[in-house]
Length: 115
Image (cartoon, rainbow, N blue to C red; front, side, top):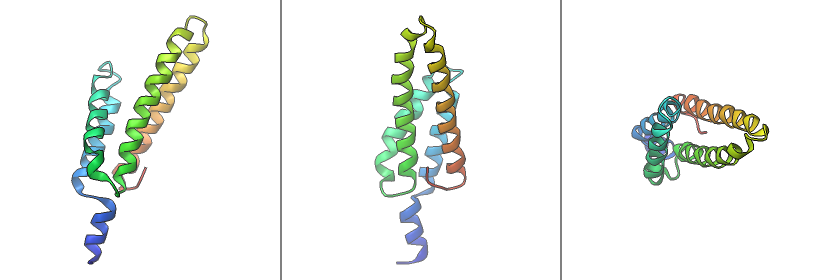
């Protein structure tokens, strides 16, 4: 097998890279759009995840999906706790964690590195 064919099987196609970057950008664009763009990014990740099996992009799709679900569950659990006051701290932590994971993934995707 040629070196180029081996490299393609490990890294996946260029279209996977593009879709991952678009998904990260949609996740970031979700903040000013009431997370409608975030939902689009997660759906895109779910749809493309199967095509990325065995490549470095698979970890990116998994990171996008898990970041969304963990943020959603923790964020929803923190809302009732806002009445006590501790919920605001939890929500702030979720926002920082969400932004860290998405920005880190975007930087790694731009550099062609695994998540």
